[in-house]
Image (cartoon, rainbow, N blue to C red; front, side, top):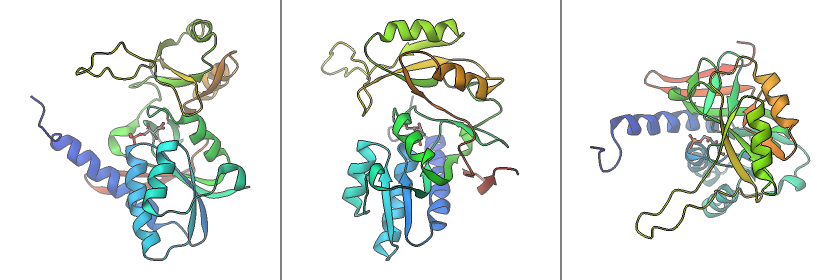
Length: 246
Ligand code: A5P
């Protein structure tokens, strides 16, 4: 039976995420324009960042989701819209899978991949923070690749993705057992659906990224290939930092 407040594994994982987040936040320079990621690890980063802001750090955040925006506002972190920030010095975000030493990652299990990729693409230095359960030997080996698609005609887009050899499933909101409503599809902040596409271990992430992106109806996908300069990995032995080229 599951422990009522999460088991020891979950507590360790949270502590490792927190340690990775703290290490990344400690390296944020003064006057930084900073992309603020989404997800549980990014939220631990926001806590650490808010503490540094209270101590006097000057920073301006650019949020990657409505939820991150609301949390940053509530924590007193100054914000700018992406369109008012011509270039970002750095972005810090979580990930679902990371492959070393290439530092290619999969993102989007929280549903924010489109804005996360737009913010990452505008950033000079992309930093990923994870616990070591996220390190895999090949992207796609454990989790599906989230693909954000236009709602109109989504079943046709799904068929096109299936023709590439993917196994797309439209993401649904969890059902509320107490109210027992019919399941509803998950809709992103930008008003699209997510198709979670099982792939198995991906031999060539660059080729797959291009093939997915070329399909009509696809807005963006969660393969972030060559979009990370540094990864902080929290684990039982502390925080490991990996940079591209290492
Ligand atoms: C949000 O869409 C995602 O890309 C998250 O950054 C990613 O899923 C990692 O989330 P956790 O930190 O919650 O594992």
